[in-house]
Length: 254
Ligand code: SAH
Image 1 (cartoon, rainbow, N blue to C red):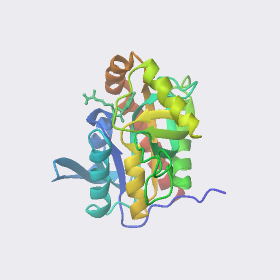
Image 2 (tube, rainbow, N blue to C red; image 1 turned 180 degrees about the horizontal axis):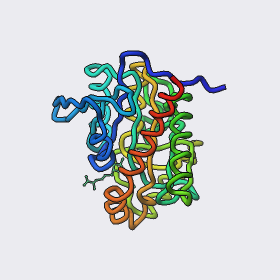
Image 3 (cartoon, rainbow, N blue to C red; image 1 turned 90 degrees about the vertical axis):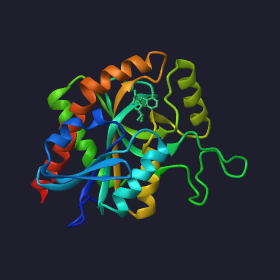
Image 4 (cartoon, rainbow, N blue to C red; image 1 turned 60 degrees about the horizontal axis):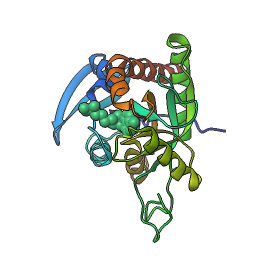
């Protein structure tokens, strides 16, 4: 049975995105809002649906994401982290407008072979970093509720998400990436640029982590066009509705 997630008392939930557009609506909804500037980033403290939260935008890529996640843990005392953003669809049937809630992350551009198996993070003895089962399940249920209510044509997927410092935007490149991962036994549903870094920082700090990615493109030759349009018009709306539902459930449960 999945262990239910409970936010540690007195610690905020960190809500993290890579791009301003991915969480635009959420900042406007914060109660008792305070802004702190640190390391060139804005950290917004406040309450959302009565739950203490800290919102921030990491910027793009694994280094920026790891720096931001570390600050959230060390400086802002986050009790758990949720990432909301967009990703390219890799798995068959993962379409633009669908949502992927991650079960685990891996860095698709980390390769210390032949010293270690490809993708394995040295010193950790593994390639994959799993999300917190209870928090992941709560996020998936909130996402399913929101999709059923607002976008009944969209599908929810759960599984592995691959992260790397590369915007994957070619049909050949995307097929190649998927085949390479598959060769080592990893079936990735989506590709993005931050999640595995946040998952590793959370593992270091013993913090529960979960992530949702709305599929903005198919990581193919049209990816750059689909992406720009999608993030502006759809992704922030998904993030707002799904995160609010997640927090409302805790309020009802508590
Ligand atoms: N146009 C943006 C840059 C986007 S980079 C700008 O000018 O700021 C892509 C972002 O969306 C990253 O944060 C990444 O996590 C996610 N993403 C969406 N589709 C992706 C894809 N096909 N490959 C890699 N990352 C993708």
